[in-house]
Structure formats: structure tokens, C-alpha cells
Image (tube, rainbow, N blue to C red):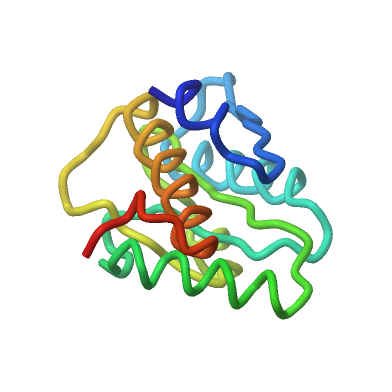
Length: 134
């Protein structure tokens, strides 16, 4: 699903997978993953943390926010999907937006596909294309 939507997105869309492979206590692993994630954020990027405690927004509001960042000169948007134990507080604290796809737990492969579809949908909304119908 990710590949299907990623191919349709005209904006540069890169997937970077970060994983802490060392065995360590949960809090330490989450903090280590957070450091690795933040090291890979491009300079000036808007940061969106995907977290079950985040905001529930519409696709149109998501597109509007991306358009706002674009118009403000932000070079890109970095989406952070946490590991099995979620995102570290340091990542959430640096996020421009904490977004939720609901309180359910989703597998990473499904979240990637859902996120790629929403990025594609945002692209189409901002272009005035009828893909998104109210």
C-alpha cells in the first residue's frame, strides 16, 4: 500500500527506517531510538510525531497544515513513527504536530501505507483535485 501511494506523490518522499537493535530497558531503548530519529531529521523540517495521544484532525486540516509549512518556506516534513514502545518524550517535545490515527495500535507497515495515502490526499487537496470529496 505504501509503494502504491508513494509512487503517486509528486513531492520527494523518502522512507528512512531507524531501529535500535541493542537489548536494553524499554525507557533507554525509546530514548536511544529518539536520538537516532532526530539525527535523521533534515535541517528546517517540520516534524510530525505519530502518537496515539496526538490530535485527531481531518484530511483537509492535514493538507492545510502541510500547505502552511510549504508557504512558510519549510523545506520538508519529517514524519516520526515510534518503535514498539512508542516515541520518546524528547521527540514529541520537538514535534510541530503530534498526530494520531486513533487510539488503536497499528502495525508499522499499515501506518506507512495510511500515511502515504494521507500525504497523497493532501497533495490532491492542495492542487484542487477532486480525489478528496467532502
